[in-house]
Length: 397
Image 1 (cartoon, one colour):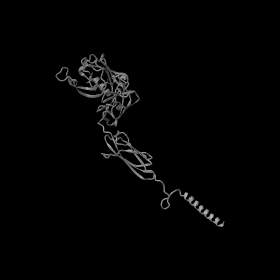
Image 2 (spheres, one colour):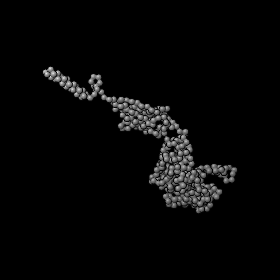
Image 3 (cartoon, one colour):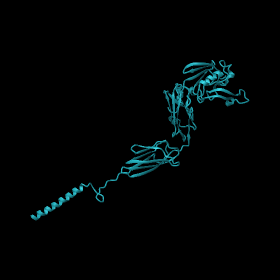
Image 4 (tube, rainbow, N blue to C red):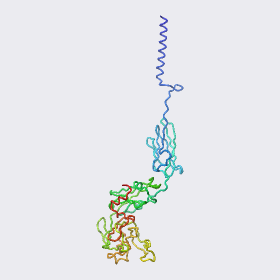
């Protein structure tokens, strides 16, 4: 019995020692590296993505966006491959997103190099390439009237954009155009032809209106492989309302300033063989003197009715050769008969007053002249169209 009891105590002692060893091992938390130091699982590598991705050519207004997950970005460069020019961009406050802040060029390739680190500070670099579309042609948008900081314009002024290439996707072009007026007035675009689009309000502009036109056309596909060449903006100011009402039946012209008649003067409009176009005309040019040559409309030297002479105090009201100007040779007929070649003839004194008072965008309304309505394309016949018909000229309905 004694031997059995002693053997049993030794077994229990051995078992207890083994149990203590297991407990001590459990407190270390797992395997250890050489030398007894504990090991940790490695932090995941930083993941860097570059967009746009792939080989397809993208619109140059598409921003380049570089993102990092499981870490942060330390440096991003986007460089024009051919020219070496860097593209500007900004890094988000948490340093996980870089976004380009300027448009890319047409038909170009850009090298993207992005460096980042994971949460353990381990670096990684990602590279990529972004290519942009190469247009068959680019269309430059000339603004109408030409932007100026020194001129104001009359209540009849037409706003417009003239392209140097045909626009086949008129809706795309029109959506990229905007006009803001203060005070606000309803208005709309109307396509004059495949290269020209005009904007006017429903009625004449209110005096004092501020107009801002924005042509955000860069990167816009205008159809047929033609893209907008650039963005442009301009601001215009409308001055007081000056409207001249020229009546071919009475051979008189009333002058209205902000709706009030301030002067009346005798006139001579176009003769029956050269009747002045009827309807609202807008002054588009102003010159102290010009050479008027009938050959410009087909009556040349040696033909009946030919003339070529210097004429003073000229305000153009259409591209069909119609002006308001000084005509000392017809003073005897002014107020009694229409004898001009389509212009509004005034005496030298009245012409001087008119020249000093009226400016670009001011209106000359012609009635009872016997002529056909001024054509919409004839700078500026836009006001001839009733508002519902004007609206039908928009490509965006």
